Image 1 (cartoon, rainbow, N blue to C red):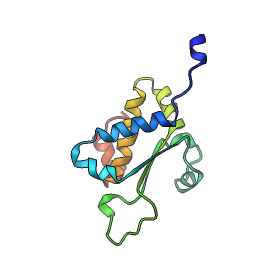
Image 2: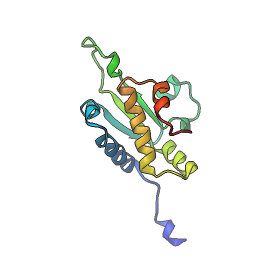
Image 3: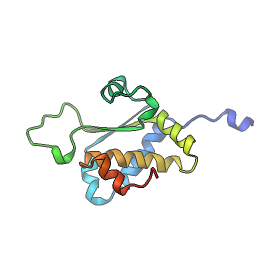
Amino acid sequence: MDEWKARSAPGIEVIEALAQAAVAALPPQFAAAAGAVAIRVEDFPPDEFMEELDLNDPFELSGLYEGIPMTEKSVMDQPMRPDTVWLFRRPILDEWCERGNVSLGDLVAHVTVHEFAHHFGWSDEEIAAIDKWWE
């Protein structure tokens, strides 16, 4: 049991490295567009996201795309900040523990790719039609 005393949960830098690896593994036709998107990892979603999405439990949100999907961008758009994929460490870690049947790398990759799919213009329904992860 003493061997566990020195251990801690994977930190933000681990989640970010796993997300970067998932982006690096995207097919070439998506790589350039993905490179223009920032990745931010925080422990929990900011309050403003919780309010905008009408969520009460921060553990309900493991990732979020913030920006204008490529299919909706216009040369007239004046972005205030770069498109961003947000990942939330604590909800991801909780889901990883609850599932118990996927690696942390696979879960982070799944959440990351799901959020990048929104950047590419896919809806949740379109993603779900090809992504059988949650079944």
